[in-house]
Image (cartoon, rainbow, N blue to C red):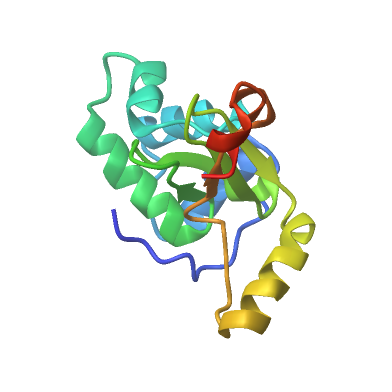
Length: 157
């Protein structure tokens, strides 16, 4: 899926607001779209398209879920990001901008307020002139639990 993160996030605090945003965005609020929005708005955890399709049940196929997720992202209702080599994860944009850390060993991920990574971003800007963002692809490394299991030579590698 190739949707730019350029569209401003929509403040849809609840399911009814999300359905209205779909209509205002020029889309029909079909039953399939309502079910998908409901699945997204009943959790604050990011989910894969396959997880969302399973949550909706028999009435949805994964291809339709992907098409609707792409439409919702163009509207600014949701954002997707990737954790390494796995499938994209989708989360409501109304939860606020998040950046992510992911553990290469166990796959655990953590949402981080962007301001918490400002010093890292500034270091990259100063040393390389690059404006770093970690909203679509996370910072990969080892979580504290996995790092604690390493011997000192492995930890420095």
